[in-house]
Every structure is written in structure tokens, then in C-alpha cells.
Image: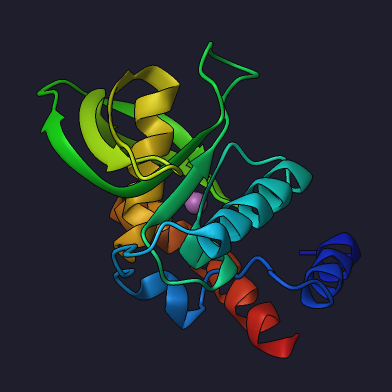
Length: 184
Ligand code: CO
């Protein structure tokens, strides 16, 4: 919530795809199934990787750049031996009974983190950027990022999942992000 943040917003606006923030309607919508996996979609995925790397994020969902499609990019290769992934129309097939807390953050909710409790392992079915069906069994950070991003394409932000007292604590900060969002 400072000049650097405002400057970053300015830079994003003069680029084709820009990151959008808490308070934007697109982030609250259930995103549409991807029907055509074509060069246009590949271009969107490329933009998402660029924005994600620039902002030092490890996952991004298309709604975060105002595109309401069920498309996710992620790269956790700095932390685990997993290649960069494009995940299209994901479905969670199985969830572990075991749940765990993990401190999450989000490029669309800058400056805010909080513990979210989620299943510690999942199995998903999805399509890759070539339209092939993929299945990913994930635990640890990978399961965490995938679930956070699937929430995005269902119109849910991690702050919606925080405990009530924490949401109350963050109310002023969230209001500020919303306001800045409208101002630019
Ligand atoms: Co996020």
C-alpha cells in the first residue's frame, strides 16, 4: 500500500494483460470451462507465466488477469522438483481426509497473508496445453497451490477462507486494496 504498489499498478495498466485485485468482479465469478485449446489460449498462458514470474508468484489463475476461464499456471520449481504446469479445466477427483494449515498469500491480495486449512493431498484430473488429459497426485506445496488456484476459478479468494477473527483484523487493509483498485 505504497508508491511502489501504485507504480506497479500503473505499469500493469499500460500492458495488455494486467493483474487485477481484491474487489474486482471477475475474481468473484465462477470462470468458464475452456472449450478451445488453441494458439490464443497458449498466448494467454504465456502472459500468465510472464506476469507470475515478474510478480514473483508461484501460481496464477486466468481470472486474476481479468480472463474468466478455467486456466491455471504454476511454477514451484524453486521449492520442489515439479516442472512449470499449465492446468486447464481441473477437477478435484480425490481429497485426503488429513487437513493442514499453511500460510497463504495471493498476488491479487497484495501485502496480506494468513493461515488456510485445506486437505493435505489431492488428486486432480485436467487438460494440459496440448489438450491431453493429465492426472496429478499432489501433496505439500503443490497440493496447496493447486487448491488455491482452483478456488480462484470458482470465484473464491484465500481471504474468504480465513477464520472470522482474522477476517475482521484484515478488514481495514482489504478495504484499502478495494479503494486503490477503484482509483486506478
Ligand atoms: Co491467488
